[in-house]
Length: 353
Image 1 (cartoon, rainbow, N blue to C red):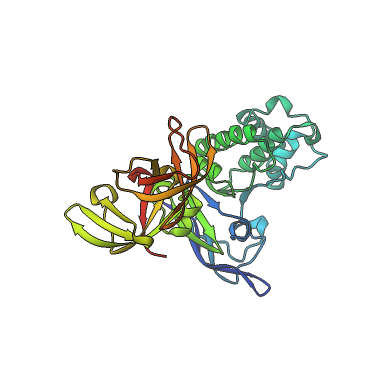
Image 2: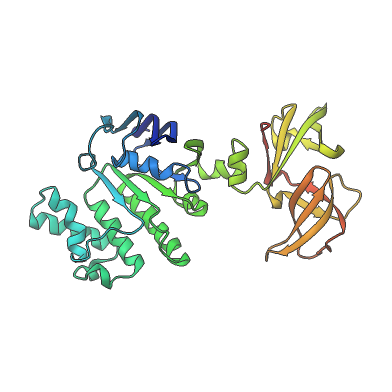
């Protein structure tokens, strides 16, 4: 695929504080890539650098082969959708949407035709004459999206666009954003701290931490095969167990963890397993059983929490504290002894930390 947006070895500082360090990112034409991470990870700084609101201390930013690095924001031709909508309160919905076209010298009749078409597309044509103050949060966000799309930018960027909306409206709007982005084929960068939002809307997701991209991949790959311990924890692998192989036998290995815990793992299920590794398991990836005959991690069950689909137990084990889920049909009492049996579909192998 043709690369539309390219960030090459970007670094940025606020005073003496390093915010981004040698960050590189390529976004293909028509692709939607989300920047995902906690506050302070550098995702909003990355967006502001692309938009031209900040200048990198080193590196290069290009869009469609055009060097943007030193261009001012108004010359970058980028559509922006903000968290706080940034609508002009004294302008009607139609005039807000048409503002960018007017700035670009699009004549009245041609401008009105494009505005009408875009308002129809986002379901706001019937409110074209209203002022922003008379709109709901979801309606304001549709207007902001229409305003960004109507100029037909080569790049569309979203800065936490749904964080001011209630939970149900966030779900509805992320579906609409994805539909519109795909229909227009607009290359897009989407900034959010919400993992579900990023995974549901994106072609690829960049998980960021301390100014670096820890992994850039499809949502499916990130969820199932995190590249390192940070990403594993981020996407819900609560249990990280350091292990070492003590025996190899054809398609199986025997591995040992702290406290003398031993497990047999299948190479057919887990793939290649190095001599030292981390077994990363979700809570669903450790099945709780009181069957003493099965192989598993010995555990003493602590606090039991009802999740609706399962009971979750805080467990004390020789390998350290672990979180595991048990069946609703046979709840076990806190203080009971049990075994925690890895479920391969909810576990993965990582390199040692």
